[in-house]
Length: 380
Image (cartoon, rainbow, N blue to C red; front, side, top):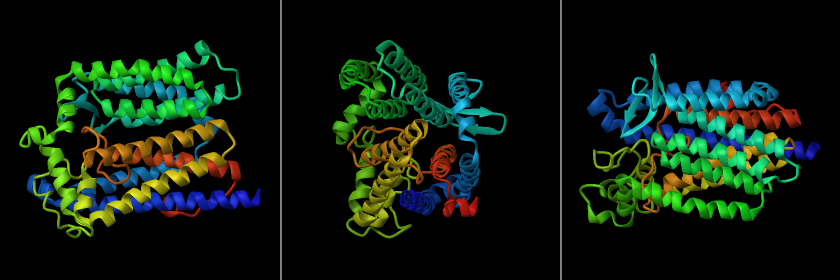
């Protein structure tokens, strides 16, 4: 028990250290990528860094609360949190409350506060799925009692996200959920049949909307329309390719001079690759690999099924987001509105992600009874 406790403590400290490194890298490159745009359009080169600092401050509060809150209380209120987050997501479809950015109604404005309910929905969805699987743990499989309700949960959540539209998050949450089902021991034949049945649905969703089909065609051949639909991915590839082995130097990006759109959010990896080259971009990928590695190690050392599934879902979801973001930036996937976790600019994402990390630390420390010393707890 003592050896296992020390092993878990080491894993938690390594896990938090990696997250701290990613956040510091994020601040450095948010400034580097956004300074020219912010100075030109907003009058201050530090505009986005200052806003991200507010996000980090709120994220630290969220981390501290999640780190110390009663986990029994979390499990009890999970259904209410899930349905509340669904309701807030529905409000983004109401013009009086929603804020449309880049053609998507993903932001909600309530008074002086503007945020993305989908970020709250991610947390609530993870906790609800984890609670659902924990209750079904070690019980006989029932297609109508276990699998169908699970599909309904995924279907309702994905449907609301598609209406915003947020195709990328809908796919990411669904993939995370089905990975958890596989880990939870659900019959593989049901999962494969469901996946096969969903393929035509995905095809219809792509071909029904012209902009999605255009994204696929652009992904296949961006040089077919280099000044239009293919402009963003071509500029991203130019940024990555011009970085070489060692990069052009931090803050010396040329693509941030109004060539590459969304350079501090969805395409920040391209700026990192341009300024730090193959070595720097490989370091980012390596950090996310170790984030996944230590996250899975922590999850597998827990005993409570709810804690295990919550930790697994969080780590898998964040890792999937990182993979999708990097694949989009390198032209391996069609463009999606998914930022690079911990690094891309975005307060709602940073706050909610740190809250989930706080829950993982809470679950680990509650089961093994220790207080970790870390970048986060020292600030909080």
